[in-house]
Amino acid sequence: MARIVMKFGGTSVGDVDRIRNVARRVKAEVDAGNEVAVVVSAMSGETNRLVGFCDSMTNMYDAREYDAVVATGEQVTIGLLAIALQDIGVEARSWMGWQIPIHTDEAHGKARILSIDTTVLEQRLASGQVAVVAGFQGLGPNNRVTTLGRGGSDTSAVALAAALKADRCDIYTDVDGVYTTDPRIVPKARKLDRITYEEMLEQASLGAKVLQTRSVEMAMKHRVRVRVLSSFSDAPGTLVCDEDEIVEKELVSGIAYSRDEAKITLVKVSDRPGVAARIFGPLADANINVDMIVQNVSEDGHSTDLTFTLPRSDLARALKVLEGARDDINYRELTTSSAVVKVSVIGVGMRSHAGVAQTMFRALSEKGINIHVISTSEIKVSVLIAEEYMELAVRALHSAYGLDAA
Image 1 (cartoon, rainbow, N blue to C red):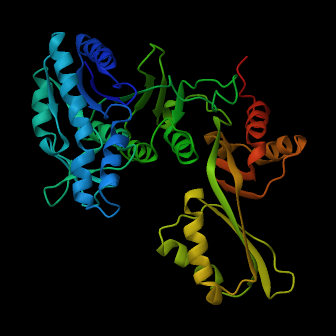
Image 2 (image 1 turned 180 degrees about the vertical axis):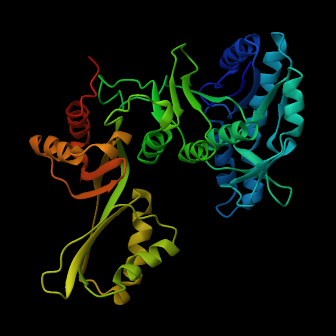
Image 3 (image 1 turned 180 degrees about the horizontal axis):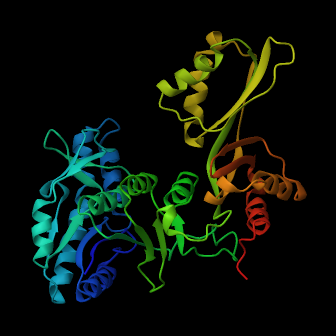
């Protein structure tokens, strides 16, 4: 007998028939003798509808009341799923985040989980009852309902699995696992049987939509084994696990890409100590995350060019910040581009193999693709390229590293 947390996203509980399908999947685990807790999202599109209600009232709403509104979506699905389970003979009870409780900080709309009191859930699971838990929400220190931000249901599920010391957290979605790259771009992309926490975290942070970044961080921190499965097929899925569980580690496990990129170049910046702090300090104060950074060598010893990337959605704010700090930074010109994408090669095998970057640069060169910016980490090499070459680059790199399915 195992203890399992099952999580179902919005598409998996999109209507009453799909909720009944979820109930059948949960019953199969119960019939196998497992203790089961289920975390569900709101029905597909429901959270957007609730957010729209708030936006239609005013642009300056109280975040506490916003949470009171948008948290109701999950209340509907947990009640319906509990009813569906009871209807097929499975003892079940629904739980809102505040009833468990799932304790969070007071950052309404983007709260972080601090602790989960599993005392009552442990008793219910031991008695054979399925706990159906609302994802995406918790209880703040002021006894107000909080929400965890978009993708928060994944985080809820992994956090609950860690607190319950579950054997596994199964996350059901509309894809049947983690692929070497986006199958819509590369039809020969392969589904991975296993992927390490580190690789999955890089994929999630670099644009892959399979798992939410915070949930992978939590899984890695607490060593929660996560399995990604489809709600609509019986395919075995992909296990996200510790590196020690993977016997043969591939040199490269995947190619990721992100369209949400913009590039800023500051031309003729004074080349003196402290100038980087004058540039990136105000951006940090404005909560703008900077990613890739490259600084040209100063030829005259007095000025240099500095290029960096940031989320495309933050470009306008960043320009306002930099223009406001122009006299302090002392740059001659500022240029921008949002017609860029970031393409990344990911793999824990890079730690012990040389030549990964060389293969990447050669493959892109052979396709006539110019590289604007390069950044690396222990298990990743990322390049910034023109947006028009994104699909060509992903296909070329997928082939260059031998990832194409036979």
